[in-house]
Image 1 (cartoon, rainbow, N blue to C red):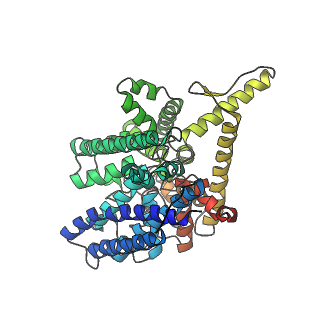
Image 2 (cartoon, rainbow, N blue to C red):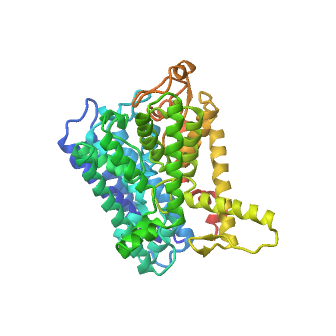
Image 3 (cartoon, rainbow, N blue to C red):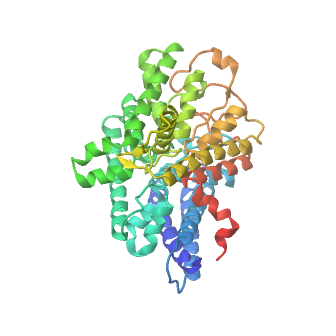
Length: 516
């Protein structure tokens, strides 16, 4: 393990993350802080502490040299997320916004992993509407940086890292291609960042022009939508009462769940690249999945007594939000009929495309599993037939298929084990523990609690209307602040675990990983 080199790389990363806090610090210096809070103190303290961490890492990395191997890159990726989570939490607590350090870390981790689960508005914490503008901007920036991958942005903007940058991109789960030489990998990384920036700017303009949002709200929601994060400047997006804003956010949440790698390649090819992107198997199944899920929930809501217009509005926004793992919500969907709940839970598990900001198991793994099922049925009917499983015209190797199946099983096992840990908080029922585990691991945000039977008898709630639940309300229009500290710590671990797609983080806990 090349610890001096690891220290040097982490020093550069912490510098980048610390400098990013200058923007919200400037906003904090010009705003009127809520009583008892000081966002300026929070950001100044975080920047000073970040500078101290940089100095320590540079001292530890003096005389660094040698190659950067796979174990080193995995170590950097894991420690980078740990450091970012702690440094990102400091402004929330030292400003006085969140008194509980566990709540501050939970909010930071949720932002960086683009989960969108929040503690604001619960357990005595201020609601987003009562939060300082600078801290709301920092929440949105955490998601925007985490959405594209902090490590990816750092590598794309600082190519002086040399050969270490390619390995760091391989350790990140954003989806940059792992083949090719170093210059090609850096070109791909810059292309992904360029597409991400372009879509973010387009979303801001559309939210202002079509959605009628103010510049600040447009920026924060664009940051969250493209990152598929879900933090809002309001307790719910329904508070804006803007159909235009919901339509714009639905479109860009869907795009946030598409592969930025494929979109970057299409941009490099120009107009001819767009049809090739639309023809990729993963994009087609993602689009088909979205249409079927929205259509099925719309029909189910209409069967529950909701008119077609409101049913389509609620289902399209909230289903796309959960499928892209964004977490925005305009309706209390955990009070919807059982079929709709199953669709929402399935969206939480599956997620968006590989190479996107979305979480979940990813559509490509679902596609491979479906192809394998179809292949197995055909082989049962015609056992002597000879054929190969193909994806986008290329034959898939048996080792690749085995790896996909192993990851799917590993993912489902992680959801189950996480649910068992969360269920130790006995105020949550079976549905709450299971959906919370799937949501944290899939970086979706909202979960489902047991709804009060009297509230269910009142019918499907209208847009923006919340319902009473049994125990802590962890639904789409509430938060996670009322849960126990250890429960929130376990959920924070699940968020990072899901963001790094399990293995890069878990290997750090193996004793053999640290042996020479």
